[in-house]
Image 1 (cartoon, protein in one colour):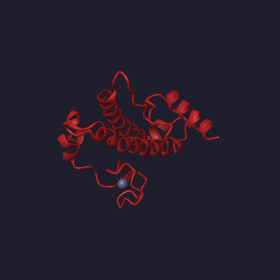
Image 2 (cartoon, rainbow, N blue to C red; image 1 turned 60 degrees about the vertical axis):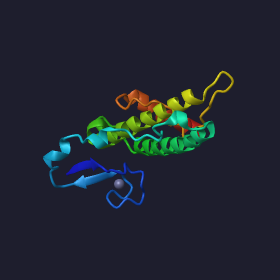
Image 3 (cartoon, rainbow, N blue to C red; image 1 turned 45 degrees about the horizontal axis):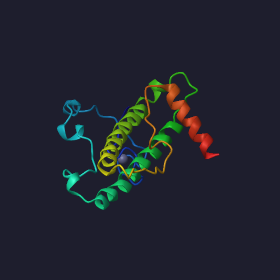
Image 4 (cartoon, protein in one colour; image 1 turned 120 degrees about the horizontal axis):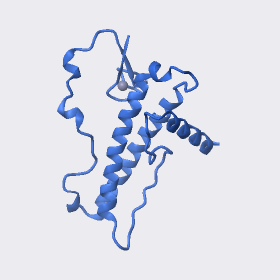
Length: 164
Ligand SMILES: [Zn+2]
């Protein structure tokens, strides 16, 4: 049985396809056309309007909470995935390949959101004013190396310590 990542990435608990798990089991082989990357799916979602510099400071600041909330939600999902991986086994990379793929996909999206925040920070920072972002989740401002077991384990351990 093949496991596929759901389009909602498990962020929608009421999802009718994956029921919030983020994974869909597919018995049928994937049609060949699906392996061809579509143009639309390559482009990262961005909260930034095309003409950012024509907006007022207040209007730009109003975009920030939307980006932070999305980062926090994606971080929460990443932590759920991390906590569901048995790192004490020797075959977890092979056994939970789809989970690592999903972690990386979410991380890529988070990086695009962090880039948005950088653009906003550049737009709003003046000699008198620096913008500070307040994140709601531990992982939101952490750049995760999904390929590094040590990095992932350190993140889980640090998060658990903070929760105590
Ligand atoms: Zn889903």
